[in-house]
Length: 262
Image 1 (spheres, helix red, strand yellow):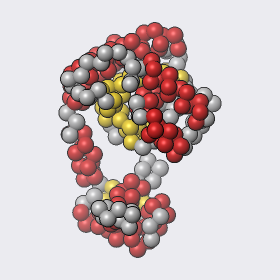
Image 2 (image 1 turned 135 degrees about the vertical axis):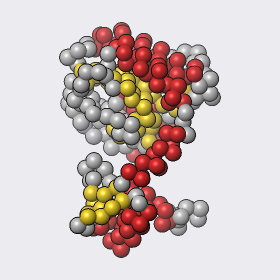
Image 3 (image 1 turned 180 degrees about the vertical axis):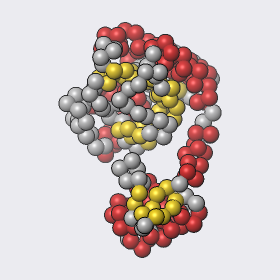
């Protein structure tokens, strides 16, 4: 990257690539695995991993490296810079209590959504999500709200780059069909997804805006299909989610004039 952009420090970019290689699927990595996942040489991956160990971001046991809690400082810096979630929590708790289902907030990062706040339902569900969890954007209600808010040129570019994996038999994987669905989401101001990321799970999401009116996040409620019908999701849940999202937006000094994402 530094050869293409003189303002980018090549070694820093490589270090973040190694850190991002750790995941739920790869909680520990050998030097060779880190090199394969990042496309770096073994020597480079080894130096980066050992530097992470020296700085307290990782540890090594029997040639396998794992991250340490110190890395959470990086993510916490982002959350701490967004005090709006302190204001959002009361609205999210009221929403979760009213519908007796979980309520979450997420932002867009590439082709994924990242959870930045969550109020779990008192009843258990098959999905276990926490702050920092990532999900693909295309089959999720919050992802569609956030994708729909992108400018048309950026959205076309993003759709051209995204992997539209089929996670269930209901998942939209055709780019044109997804684009049409995003137009609908943009016009109506909310998204509803029924079993596209996980069979038997339904959700509804609405946008949260900052003081300039830009969509900065989305909130949603998720429910088991055995408890909540599609009709109830549209008629009862959607208005409540939109109201909560608008209330959060008002608390950060913006009052939406309509449900439109424009």
